[in-house]
Image (tube, rainbow, N blue to C red):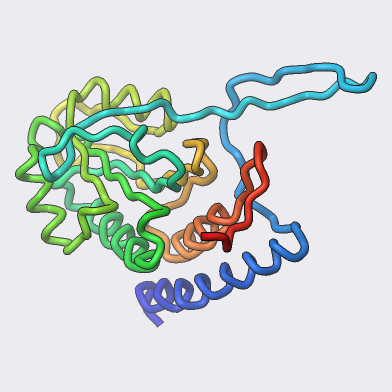
Length: 232
C-alpha cells in the first residue's frame, strides 16, 4: 500500500478513535494528552506547607500578516482555536508540495470542525510570494480559504517569529532557490497558542498522529473552568 493510502487509512481510523477517546475521557477523565513544549519559567509557591512548582509554558506571541485574499489578519482573532502552522514558499520544488498536500488532507479530515481548527502557512520568501502568488498557490491545491491562511509580510518579522516563537530550524540562505533550507515540520498549537506537537509534514505516520492529537486537544478541559464538551 502506498504512503498516500496508508495516510488515508490512518485518518479514517484515527478520527473515529478520537471520538471514542472523547467519550472515554468524559467518563474516566484519563487520556494521555499531547505534551507541552518549551517553558518560559518555573514559579514556586508554598501551598499548605508544601512547595509547589508551576511551569509557565511558552505561548506563541500574536502575529499579524497579509493573507492570500489580501486581508490583514492576526492570530489574536483566532482565540480558542487549535492551530496547525507550517513554513513554505510557492516556488519550492520539494518538500513544500508534499507539505501542502498533507495539510489539505488534514483540512479535509476536520471539515466538520473547521470552526475549531485553523491552518496557517507562512512563506519564507515574501519578496516573491505576493498576495496574488499565494492565492494562485492556494487555488492550485483547492484549499478552503475560510480556515487556512497563506501569509506574507516583512521577511525579518517572519523569520524572527520562526526563530523566537516556533523555535524552528529555519536557515536564511540568502537567495531563495532549490537549495533553500527550511523546516518540514507542522507545529500544533493548543487553544492558548502553546506548542503541543512537532510533526514531520512529509511522513504519513506522523500526520496520522497529528490528526489524533488534534482530536485530543478538542477535548482538553480549561483548567480555570469546568465545561461539558457536548454542551452547545
